[in-house]
Image (cartoon, rainbow over all chains, first blue to last red; front, top):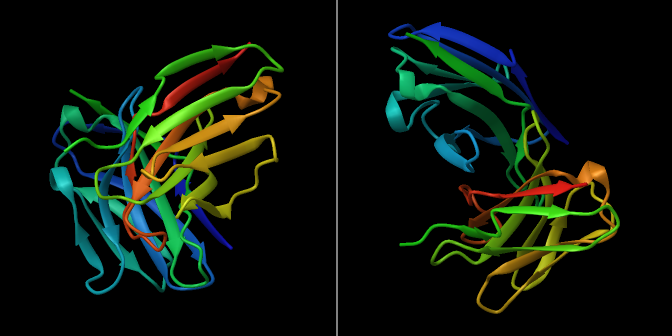
Amino acid sequence: AQSVTQLGSHVSVSEGALVLLRCNYSSSVPPYLFWYVQYPNQGLQLLLKYTTGATLVKGINGFEAEFKKSETSFHLTKPSAHMSDAAEYFCAVTSRGAGSYQLTFGKGTKLSVIP
Amino acid sequence: DAGVTQSPTHLIKTRGQQVTLRCSPKSGHDTVSWYQQALGQGPQFIFQYYEEEERQRGNFPDRFSGHQFPNYSSELNVNALLLGDSALYLCASSLGWAHTEAFFGQGTRLTVV
């Protein structure tokens, strides 16, 4: 079984400020971890993913995330928020092996950027 | 290169009716997964099709069924619609069922009245 918890359904930051969106996961086997972004009335766009190797993962639009096994976390960060970052962000997990690669999503965090 | 395309974009149905949603995967992809996203929630996995067979299924009733065609496109069918079936239905495609990256379509917004 696998699950994702995103802390904070809404996060507000000022333009230019640090963005930190929190994600904790639960998985009985080594996970693959993903962050997706969703703009209003649109589908999901992949920001970044962790599968194996380097635990600090860089994605599109200046976002990055760090896989911390000891903390079962995969928090998303961006040094300086831009107005165009306002959207909903979803953390997702899937597990290697066991023949199951369905994505399990968190409930999402809506990011607002204040000018 | 066309990405994942879904049709229709919006749909309104009456409780008890049946609906069919369609998905064409990204060029080169052979696996299609369907997700339901209720308002204010994250997407939930419905099922996955690979080689024209349902490979995995989430916790959804048998009213939800699907099909994959030889050209890898897919349909999601929902029978006996309930008000609670109102949601955004997302299709995701990938290369192989043991994928590490899924590409999502824009979704079909289904409203059941």
